[in-house]
Structures are given as structure tokens and as C-alpha cells.
Image 1 (cartoon, rainbow over the protein chains, first blue to last red):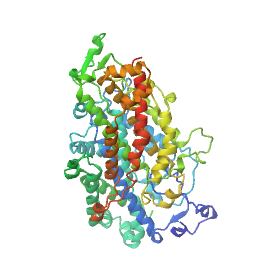
Image 2: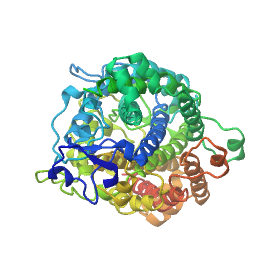
Image 3: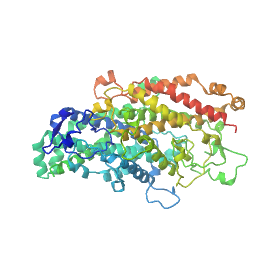
Image 4: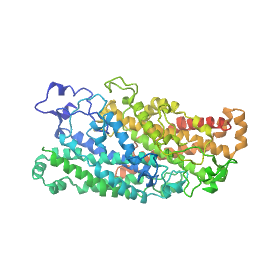
Length: 309
Length: 309
């Protein structure tokens, strides 16, 4: 770890103690109770760190696909409105109510002190009851001000879920009364909300990881980015963060993952010779091409524009 | 649907109305706000229903494997105790606190009115705020009294998680500081708790599905089971519900699923020729053989012993 850290000029002894034999730094999921410290992560001296961002992004693809494979078992009708579900007036839909309550719980447990996590309903959050600890800071402080979940939320319900259900294998339904799931019904709305929240959180995390990607790219070609940032040139910044060959590889990989993880596994030869899929595999690369990658680049550009503040 | 229902002698008009064009019955996951009615599901006249139980059980295998594949990214140290995580005295570990709060939320949304769902902390639950609806009853009322989560919980933490982490591919770690995950740390305890809860709920649902399996078997060979039940012959009941050939097929299928879903997918030939796995595939059939299937049969026997009450 020490080798991965470079101290800011004003480093004090309070900061040095964070560099313990078992430093409390991780970027893997969501839950690091993080308080800003004055230790600056130095990317240029930590190639292993860049490799780990890449690894984490690749692993998050699996999480997104697993979540969608769980979600696809259900209809989408339930999440549209409360549909007479609650006896009294209820201001939220069931999925809104559930995610608000879960985010309150997670906030109490320090989730949103992690640089990786971005709540969907930030205005509702209580304070953490977890002992604050200080960790090396990885992102520029501007990262806290970037949260595009208000864009991810509507697109998930109006575009992703309907397309997902169109891409569904018609046999893909765990219900004992499959007709209900195909017809749509409101009796599974709780289960659907649970799945929707897992999908939304997985997509949100992957998209907001653009902050870490942007920081890595900035550290890697500082002068080039500084010029574009100073000129507030969004178009140029978008070009700078776009690597078409990398995007092509990502699409190829997630399609292969969709074919692998999305298989309906049967213990007969037929399965190997002629596999069936829970979701049409082409849905996943399209999701990444149309939504995940553009949003990730939007986060990168937003982060870079504020990187010199 | 009508064809699937046989009325009990005392059926009243109140029950008939539940047989609407879109009957509110589903056994697929967790969240059907269910209130007992006096319409009895007749298995003998619904072969499709038995097939759907089987389908749901098979689909739940995928859910269990996906959850474990997510869990295996983390160390297990964090869940053991609070480890100075909370400033004040806190009576629960983070995973206990999180599941209690989630079960309270789910209870308010009617989850535990579903015959499929069994909470881990039933004594903590508030009343549902969801409008109660009446549905055809599928299980005998004794089903409500059967909940072996108090056995699943400790075995999950003392046996399943340690064995899962032993079975982990050493590269399987999404953390940006992999050493931390391998060494164990308490900074990911929230993420670990989220995964543990998903694994516990998936295992609990699959195991308690034994109630539906037992009901189906009972309906299928009523006289044979009645004799054993009246004699309170646990040993005989266990023999009656045990089909070794079926168990062998389940183990074969879940191992194939572990090899398929657990692959580390890479876009090169090497991947196809010589796949690597996130979890040693043999772990999954062993989990089913040693824990899932024995517990499921325990639930079946408990249900059958009370089936004539």
C-alpha cells in the first residue's frame, strides 16, 4: 500500500496513521464508511490500481446480468402504480417506497460515505450510525456532486424493463401460474421491486464508476485533459474518454456472458448442442451500447469538467 | 384456473368471487399478500401445477447459485461481530440489524402473508399495510407453524460461508485492493451483509418449498402417507419423501449450472478450451447434498406430520 500512496504537501501525522499494515481502503462494493482524508492516491505510481478498476468493472457486468436474469422472471405491470395495493393514500409506488426505506437503512450503515455509491433518493437520508473512519481519498472532491440516478431511474422503467421483457424467452417464468406473469398482475409487485432495486443499484454503480475511470484517465494524460477542461470543451472531453476498440470488446464480452449465464441449463446433450436462453443474448450488448456506456461517459465528462475546481 | 380448483363442501359465495377471470394466485416468489380462503387447491386435477412446482424449484437453483457467486467476492471476517463498527452499544451484528430492518419493511408490504415466505426474525414483524386479498389456499394451515430458519441461519455462517470461501478461485475478488479481501477486513461488511441476506433468503425459500413438495406428494399417495402420519413414523415418512434418483439428477444439474454460471468469461479461445470458475463447481452439489436437500426433507416430514391436524 505505502508504495501506492503519495502524500499531499500538507500531510500530517493524523494521515500517516491510515497507512496501517491493514489499510482500510477498498473500492469493491458500496459499503466502505468513508471520510475524506488528506492522503491522495497517486495513480501514476499504482498500475495495479488501474488494473483493479478494470477488474471491478468486468465483475460488475456479471452482477448486472445476474440481476436482469432474476428480474426477467416477472411481469412489469406491478411497478407502474400502487394499483389499489394500499388501503390509505400512499405517496410512493411500492418500488419507490422500498428503495427509499432501504437507502435510509444503508445510509445509517455508512453506504453513501463510499465513493462508489450514489443513492437514488439522497434527500431522504439519515446520518450514519457507523463510526467514521478516515481513508485515503481516491477521487477529487467534485465526485460527491455527480449523481445521475435521476436519469437512470426513468430510463430503467420506461426503456430497460420493457425491452428486457420483450427479449425474454417465453418459458422463462418461475410462477406456478405462468399465465399470470405473462398477462401481468400486481401480486408479485414486492418481488419485482426487490429485483428492480438490485438491477438499478448494479447499473448505477457501474455507470458512476465512470468517476474512477475518468480520474485514472486524467492521471494518465493530465496535460491533454487539463487543456480540454480549461476550455470547458465537452465535445473534446467526450472524444478523449471514448475508446471505440475498448467499447467493442466490452460489447463482445457481455454478449458472451449473456450466452453463458443466461443459458437454460438442462442435463441432456440437447442443451449443449442447442442451448436456449432466458434473455435473447443480443439484449445485453445493446443495453451496454445504448445506455450503460453513454451514461458512464456522461459521468466521466461531468467529473472531468469539475476536476480542476 | 377454474379447472384447477375443487370447492370444499362449505364453500360460500365469498370464496367463489376469488375465481375471477384473472385469479390472484401465484406461487412465484415471496410477495403475494395472502389471506386464507376456503377454496382448496386440488392437486390431483392439476398436473400442470405439479410441473410448475418442479419448474420453480429448478429456477430457484439458479437464484441460489447467482447469490453465492456474488457473495464469494468478499471475505467473511466482517460478519462475525460488530468489530467496533458502531459508536454506541449495538445489540445486533450488522447482518442481523440489516435483515431485521428489511424483514420489517417486507412485512409491511405483505411478504410474509405469502405461503412461500418464512422470515428469519418473525418476532420483530409489524403488520402489513397492504390491502389484504383472499386467495385460494394451497397448503394445509399447519404450514404457517413450520419455519426452520433458526437452523439455516447458524449453518449458513458456520458452514456454508467458510466452505464457499475455501472453494473460491483466488482471483475471484472484485476489490481494488484484493489483498484486503483475501486478508479479511471489516470495511465491506455492509456489502457482505446484503449478499448474505440474498443467499439466506434464496436458501430459505428453496428449503421451505418442501411444504409444497410434501403437499403434492401427499395428494398423490394420500392413503400411504396417512398411515405413516397417524403412526407418527418419522423414519417411514423420510423414506417416503426420499427419491434417490431425483436427488442424483438435482446434484448433476446444479453442478452443471455451477460450471455454466460460475465461469470466468473471457473473450478468447482459451476460455472455451479451458474454463476457470469463480467457485469450485463441486461445492454446489455438495451444498445441495449436505444442507439443502436434507433440510428440504426435514420441512416435508414436519409438514406431513401435521398434515392431518
